[in-house]
Length: 383
Ligand code: HMG
Image (tube, rainbow, N blue to C red; front, side, top):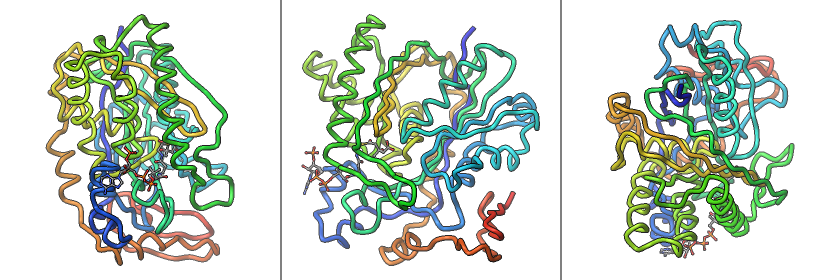
């Protein structure tokens, strides 16, 4: 019996900034962002939306009433939580009207949280094959205006329903892990934005990948020819490419071109969104499924990286008829129908914060699941 991802969807807010506009405003050559970082657009979130609205919006697209009866767990992987105690998952569980006898909790380790949640779902469904687990990876990547990290911001959520006999992808249960206590990117309590050593973080990412890749070869007796594609956590789309190229010396030129072509297919969506931390690897996976030259039975390698640092490499196999279950037009429409912001509009939206004085304020964002009121430091959402 296979366990895996039966359905997958993503959500981003309705606003974006063009990277040429950001470059011009910051007196930088636009090619640095488009070519040097591999980013064309950046998703921007209004104050009335958060990881709950992103996650609920992504999950609502894929869940049927039958699914909601069979979900035993809702796990949210995030590093953008607004509460140290209450989880976003319990709010999403309520908004989506999932049956009440379910577990719901948040999982954290930087951008690795979504993968930790997905593997927990795999373990649970393996033990309870008739039940389902909803995994959500939702984040808002913000470094601050005029900072080195600004062009690598973004936001969004990916929702995945893990079941037996999945329609899309099956786990191969071949994970290898790597942990190293390092301060490349971290956000101590009290800080609105992360502290980051950008260049060090790039190096730790690449070193983590090359180490885990060697370990994977040893443990799973595979080499690059066993994978139809290698997908990566994408803080910006040049990052995974650098890691991929770090293992090119062990491949023929033809093999390098094959994997780089799949890589290009996997970054189509992220070029238009930016970093969504925990969801980035899975937005890359969706881009690969929607745009990739792949076939049923193909094995896809996934490299998950969370600063700090924890990594995991694992693979999944494409199911027969997986193409029938993709929502390619819907995904493309979500990105192409967004509203472009000017720099002034972006900066104003960036600086707006929800009040924290406990008073009551109402908002008129009529998007499904937006925040419509805050009162007594409780957020109330549109259903
Ligand atoms: P920077 O100093 O602004 O940029 O920092 P740079 O000078 O390193 O240039 C970037 C690239 O643009 C270079 O290419 C330049 O050559 C090129 P590379 O040598 O790297 O291949 N370039 C140009 N190309 C074409 N035309 C031009 C031009 N000018 C320059 N005119 C940095 C960039 C990414 C470090 C910064 O934006 C940053 O600190 N970002 C945040 C941290 C980050 O994203 N780190 C990634 C690894 S860590 C990670 O993935 C985890 C994370 O997602 C968090 C989590 O786990 O929770 C971040």
